[in-house]
Length: 444
Image (cartoon, rainbow, N blue to C red; front, side, top):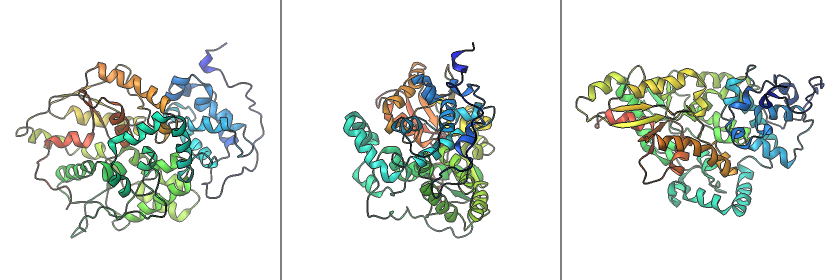
């Protein structure tokens, strides 16, 4: 008998016929029916050892293999409460896909399952669900309302379709339209670089947006501009199962950047970068928008990859006149990027080249922070338990700064780190900006 972690789910029937039709809801992108996709699963159990949730619960149903078995047995979309609970307990971190020998895109299948389970997921029902959860768990309400000590002004100015509303548990206002985005002067000529800010950098911590533009301008000597009509990347809506809203937001962003079709796009948010690159997957059944989505996604650049060949020489030069930092830091890999080798290596190389930075690695390597979009709202205890082991290692190592480029990870760290403690969380751009000439303008 093999190791328990490698056992197949009970009495799997690999000869089960695949139904010819499956009741997809209107608007769902064309995709293999769940039973057919589940039969690609080799039942090897590789995913059981990397899933952050399964490590905490020990429940086979919370692994990708367990969900493949469950989805393979479905014959309609009338799901039970147990099914809704199982598909909600997924961070969509992609760790399972990274180790899957057959490269099954498990996060996409979970998002589609959530789309069908609209009684639980999606902005239209999220307010009701959150109200029920907070009534049952008052500590959840306290955590959400105290998060970042959000002011009423911020709540009122945050666009209704911003992913931050889902991440922070802020209901979308009824009968209101999105406020006019922060206006920047139209460039006198064609800009060299365009900025996709993301919700956190534009609405909550605009210093990240400004600093990213300053870094890009300093590193290249080129003009930088932020198109006003861009909005939320749509990842939060996609993760919640609201694929219709995810596609609408994608169309809005593709259109916002259409005036300069050859200009590269730079984003400071790792989660946004990952989702912007997946836009073609949203339009597999729409030839016109698929073509536009592919052209758009090919222009998107991740921050550290963009800066790596350009910034280090300038930092070394400016270090002669700028007091060097003296910080012990750890780089926290955003889950959306850490499974791509170059995306884990380049930020570390960039930090190692920064004067005064002592880059450390944690004993157990890169770990998920446990936020997972709305996961930390639906399953606060699980989210906190996932984060606790990571934070314990960080605090024991006496780290000065946790450096990351993921908006969700920053939210989680700011929520859980002691406010008066030694260790602080900081965006990668903000740390690198120490060596920037202070008089450099961010936008032209």
